[in-house]
Picture: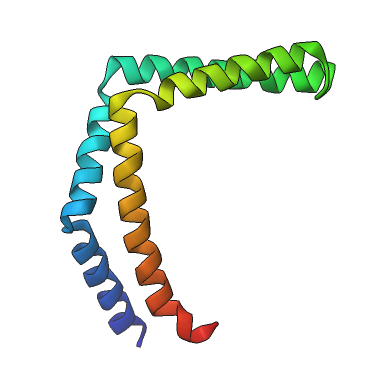
Amino acid sequence: MDQILSEKASKLKEELDSLPEVKELERLNKLLNNNEDVMRLAYKKDMAATKYEDAVRFFGQDSSEAIEAQKCLHLAKLELDKNELVIAYNKQYKIVREIYDKINKEIFNPFN
């Protein structure tokens, strides 16, 4: 039983990996990871997140330092999200996520 289930799961994964929607997401992911502008914006966002976390830890959630750091984080995230490649990736990610959700419901819905 375990062998059969494992084989069927592997086959399903292969089928999913061969979907054009998934292949496009993989292509966009590679482009994202090799794009200097996206990497710079992601780094800027990560540094702003760290600064915000530190401000909350040291000064408290409602401190002026934390509020200012939160604004900087919001702006960095907004700048990253406005990048055309990031927009395309997020759009494709949603398409693939919907496919996976549909499969999940089909497989596991009878058990709910």
